[in-house]
Image 1 (cartoon, rainbow, N blue to C red):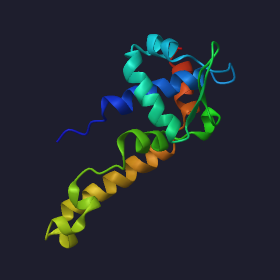
Image 2 (cartoon, one colour; image 1 turned 135 degrees about the horizontal axis):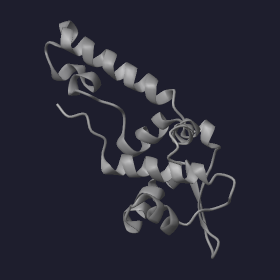
Image 3 (tube, rainbow, N blue to C red; image 1 turned 90 degrees about the vertical axis):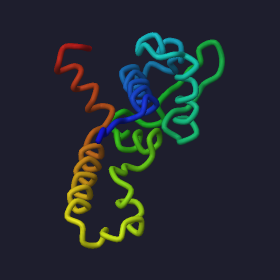
Length: 142
């Protein structure tokens, strides 16, 4: 079993980290984010539109326009971003639809998957964009 995030989720998180690094500097153009992160500008625009509609970023029109975080980086949890771009965490179908499997009520494996889902959720809830920028600074890759 492969637990994988989509390209949309990975690129969206990277784009938001880029905006978080520039937080307080005003709007950042999509082409700058795309260049910094090695993401197609067209694909990035689609992702940013989804994030804009979800209220994580706002767009500013004009020559000095671009995207800006709606909240400070320390107030944006990674879980929120993943939920927007990926949807709810569902490792196996029986977690979201217990009736799909007749063994759901008495299945030790389902208990394991539920605990794993809870741990992943707690971990993603505990991390913010500011935390991720801190990781970059601490690893000297910033």
